Structures are given as C-alpha cells and as structure tokens.
Length: 337
Image (cartoon, rainbow, N blue to C red; front, side):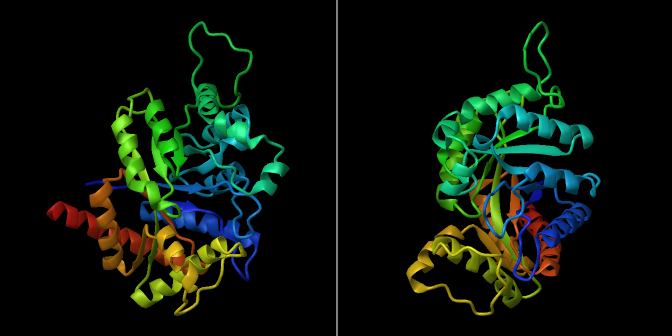
C-alpha cells in the first residue's frame, strides 16, 4: 500500500510572531517535509484574516519553490471567482516554467473571505461563482498545448503548453460532481467541513468520467494531525486549533493562539466545534496511526493532506516527523490485515 502524505500550510501568523516569521516558518516547513518524503505542500488563498498570510498564494509558492528542490508545491486553493482565468494561467505557467514538474493548481469556488472582501475585490461574486465550471475549463485550455490548426486571439504566455495539473477543491457535493464530470483529481476540505466527506467521495468516484487528465478517480482527503511524543503534549498543541475554531464560531478571530493546557470549549458551542474537527488525529504515533487507519478503511483515499496549525514551530516540525512514523505503522497494519 502506497499512501502519499502531503501538507496544507496557511502561513499562520501566530500570537507573538510576525508575517515575516510566518514566511520563514513556511520555508522551513517545506524544506523539512521534503527531507521526510512528503509528496506536496499546498497554500490556501484567504483574505482579511489576521492569522493567515497565504493570500498572495502564487507569490508564496514561488518563494518556497526557490528554496526547495523537488517537493511539489501548489494552491489549496486559488479561489477562481476572484480572478480572471487568463491571469491564473499566466501565474501558474510562470511557476511551472521556473520549477518544472513541481507545481499544482487547486481551484476553489469560495471567495476566501467575507462580504467586505467580496466588495473590495470588486467582483459580482454570485455571477463569478456560477461561472466557475466554465472558468475552470477556460483555464485548462490556456494551460494546454495549442491544437493543430486552431486559432485564438488570446494565449497564456507563459502558461500555454505547461499543462499544470488542475485539481478541484471543495467541501460540498458540487465540487465532487464537477471534478467527476471533468475527469480531474478532487480534494475534500474535511479538516474543517467534514459533514459531506463520505458522500462526496462516493459521488466523485461513482460519477467519474475518464479524461486526458486522469484515467481513474484520484481522491484526496484533508485531516488535522497533531502528533507529539506524549498524548498530553499532542492535546496541548491541539488546543491552538480548538481555540481558533471557537474564535471562528463566535466571530472573534485573531492571530493563531498560544496553546493552553486543559482548554475547555464553552458548553454552548462544544458540539459545533467537535463536529467541525471530527476529522482529526491527535496523540502519539500509535494513536495517530489508529485514527488514520479508521479513515483509510472507510474512505480508501489516494492521498491524505494534513493540516498542522500549531502555534509552536518546533512542535510542528516534530509533528511532521512523527506523522511519517504513523504512516509507516499504518502501512504495516494494512499490509498485515
């Protein structure tokens, strides 16, 4: 059983830190992931969120790519309704030309922010979101090699002929249906919106149409993983993410908070937080492997992308190491079954 592990990085801005430190930490994270054998690192486009510095996603990818050697890097994702497909084709065509064979282009339909962001982007978001399937296909065409005899007045230069792999991202059945219809790989945002995870995987696989991109479905699920040398330390660092979700639900977002031992979620939102974070693996190597084994047996994902929203950078790097140890345990367990 081969099961690639990858990483989702939001270039978190931590309490007591700075945006500059966030970028330095992202480089160090990717470099360490590369040495450990992770498959790819993705960065997500968000706007107007104090704790997230990956808003200029293609710029951050370029910065990290220049300081790594072979690990794949990409967007998880670019929020396409915010952009003209031509511009994204040019940006990712440039990245692919500079770093051949290392760039992914994950596309989402959300705005990556609130109504204030939508207004600031000067977009009719509802119309742009409705155009998402058409825009995805237009973007793929810009990245493809020109057809013999075809004439077009607009070409993506750079971009044309790079065939950057395009992924559809989502947290609902819409993305699963679109990815299946277009024959594209699909990644589900189960690290924060897990309610449709199992149904989306089923819809995607049952409706998949082979294409020039893929001959069979390729499904990636996201999971929060907080691995540490002790259960106590793992839950201590996990409290950073729990606090962040409490802030989201109560509309009190801030910088990535410091961990708190014994943190208790307010009772009136405890079930909501638990529901949002149910696709998480927290604990020692053995505990994390057991939890990931559950998801693997239920979903059979082709790849798992891991969110590690730690406050402590050293603890996050240690978690990277222990997570790969957990993958080794998972492989042995499944092989013996």
